[in-house]
Length: 123
Image (cartoon, rainbow, N blue to C red):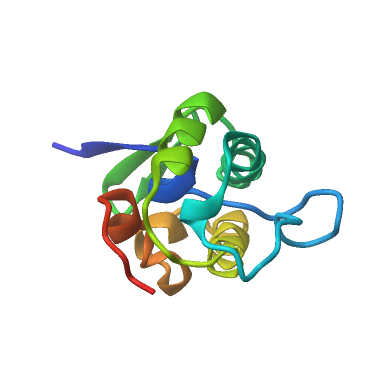
């Protein structure tokens, strides 16, 4: 039986390409994920959710089904994150997810997300 993983296109399955300032979230790339306020977290999540195909999108990644969560769910996750990974790392992850939505669980650019979402620090 296939597993279903709900992805909060956020810290867990976050993300951020695009925006008004060209590639990237437009947020200072040296800032940490934990430093984002709710408005900034929402902006990152809007980019992340879009990069993964939109809310409710289900992607098959080698037998694992990933469902993209809503911007609201993502925002809650990102705003609560305590990891010190940088926005630059997050932007790279989001860019990788635009190319391959499965990068959220298998791409080296996104490898920090699991520890970030679980309250760890992988910087």
